[in-house]
Image (cartoon, rainbow, N blue to C red; front, side):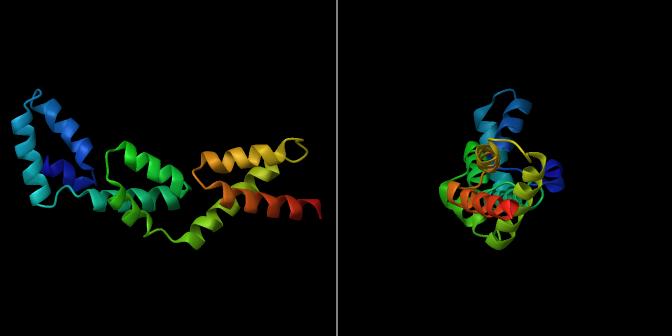
Length: 145
């Protein structure tokens, strides 16, 4: 498990599943292994959440809402999620949203439902309604000119 955790970040719930499978469901053995991994800093949920948020924000172009949801699904606490999301640069995230939506608007030129499709696309990427709607309005205003 140490070798596995040395290669990339894992959250506690992912490692718990792997260890439980390897030990054929032995809960006491699983807990012992997990305690050792956490104590020796091989597994750290904050480190995992920070790396996950950075990667998904910068590489995949996800918004804060989607990142928060995915981390919560992994069983990571709200405090840790908030701390990890605080490390994301909001200006860069807004710039990524503008870039995503401007690329999408080109593919929807002439579509009568362009506003709705852009809103749905931005919300699906995990950005808040306020962020998406302001960027969509600006893009559509610039497109009319």
